[in-house]
Length: 287
Ligand SMILES: Nc1ncnc2c1ncn2[C@@H]1O[C@H](COP(=O)(O)OP(=O)(O)OP(=O)(O)O)[C@@H](O)[C@H]1O
Image (cartoon, rainbow, N blue to C red; front, side, top):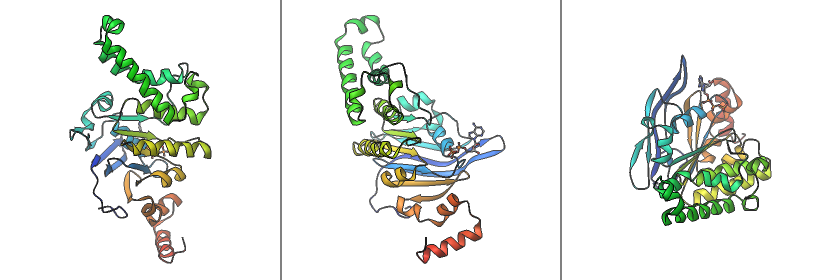
């Protein structure tokens, strides 16, 4: 068991085994193994260039890893080997949704329309993929009502209901980030992967984001996030994995990793001999 974790055994939703990713001569990820538990917020942190986005891109199918296995276990018990799936299959079959570092909304569509577009697949399925189905089928009408209900639910959760009819591009930055998250939730994921959700947010927006992410977790969706904002990471994460130069250097509760000398050294960029001094200072309670 990782140091700093509790004794209660939780189900694993995501298991990364001996993952490596090479770009030409550069080993961006080197034999990385980690687990994310169901119903928890797991944060992936580390200095710039540590390999966080590369791990994310391997999990969500944007990159095919050079080596290793990534297993996603759904609530039904069914397992998917993500490295063998295409990105859209990872969303559709394995129940993984993601957001990106750069906001990718349909800025000319309204806030509500953005959430309805996210449910396009479910609506088309209900139509039977026919014009007649779109025009007259009761199943399609029911699906439209359900998609509006789901959109409204997430707009309320994301504190965006008052802006439902405004173009998404008119929202302040923090609200656009929450809309992206609401949109991802409308696909009904079991694992939500967020790439720097707090980037560029002011302190008030960060607090609203924390509330939204906690409520998503409390409703049973597991979260994996990359984040540089330590006020977000330490406040809401159940579990933190720290990378440096493509390798895991620490893994445990927020309290465990923030007191881990290797993590402190990685963030301060210190040499090995200085690390020993930090360790001594930590033992003496001076850091
Ligand atoms: N497509 C790519 N081609 C070549 N090298 C890449 C590619 N993607 C990432 N890298 C390299 O892999 C290493 C890890 O990059 P990555 O973006 O995963 O780090 P990161 O921890 O997400 O950094 P940051 O916090 O700055 O976003 C870096 O040295 C980066 O230059």
